[in-house]
Length: 92
Image (cartoon, rainbow, N blue to C red; front, side, top):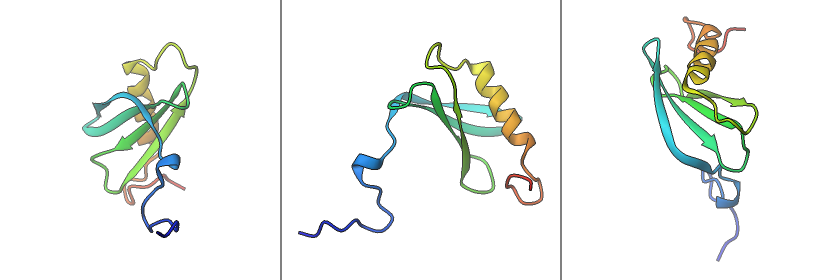
């Protein structure tokens, strides 16, 4: 049996694990999935579900209290403000 990794498959030991169910938030007409990392308290991953590309960002802060919904929405607005409308990527 080969121990070589399969291309495009992340080994189980390297996969990010999440705590609880993901939350879907719509801000300014854009949908984001928000997940809280289980192994990194206070770290959240935001996936832009309706963007023109597979894109997202992360936010880290104190482990407690959990990031509030208004704080998540503010993080999303800050991210969207940096997007170049012509390319759909972060502006240079």
